[in-house]
Length: 380
Image 1 (cartoon, rainbow, N blue to C red):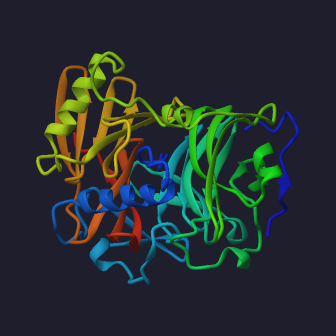
Image 2 (spheres, rainbow, N blue to C red):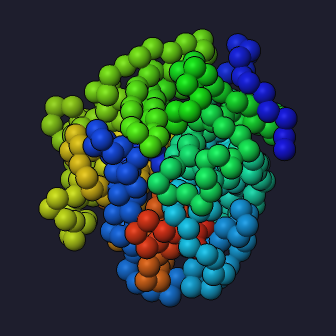
């Protein structure tokens, strides 16, 4: 195990997938589960072989590391596990010129993408911290990365009492030391039996947390806003937590006109969208450490998550069909990613050099099997 330190020194300065949509009051973690599961069901590309395609490099997570494969259909079979504990790409974030991938259950992988589309990886894994915990977000913060993770009581493959380390919700990755440090909010220090099941980054120094306590007699929730720079925290309302999750609209006065038009084009590209399903757009870029989130409904029991990567002058939206909607100024075009086999779906997208890095999973409701990434050269 690497040396772990509690982070308190001021010079150690420290982002969904941030939570899908706002959860129902009495079942926050469970609704999150439903959102991810529904996205898995609706986010599947058109059935295909998922084999080698021009400009495509495929990688599968095997024992926590990325191995090159010819395509998902040729991926090594793995035992299905709940999405909360399965090895999969849970989030991606840029820190300077480095792209970091959150490997659920393992830690972080630092990826480089060459001009030919081939990828290389440096691993920063720590099973004592990450095993049996769910990573929801990684947030760049002053040259480091804050990682939010939690123990999911409902969907797990280990009992909480068997975890080597307890009371972990935030850790900081220190690139210069290739090491992790504990980041413990005051609420957790006072209440080590509570889990931070919800997390929303308002800025690199303002995190709104949803805390949950469960035992045989009751379930309770609490909400705080944590400022890691000052190690300060204040109590907030559930409404403040919901507001931190993002703008509860995809059109109207709260949404810039160009974004509203872009969201409308994305919606038009999902002909099979259920009338009761909400849309959630999560926008990230290399320039901003915090995602912007917009959702079509303030609260919903099902949602389709659409990952959007932005660069100066362009937006790239990963649609459930396995297409990428590209918007630049007033022009739009659609790029088709390689079709995936039945039961597989794309989950997240970023742009690295002249390629897309797209995570993929094999999913069946709450379980995930094979998982990895596609590096896809962007056609001109």
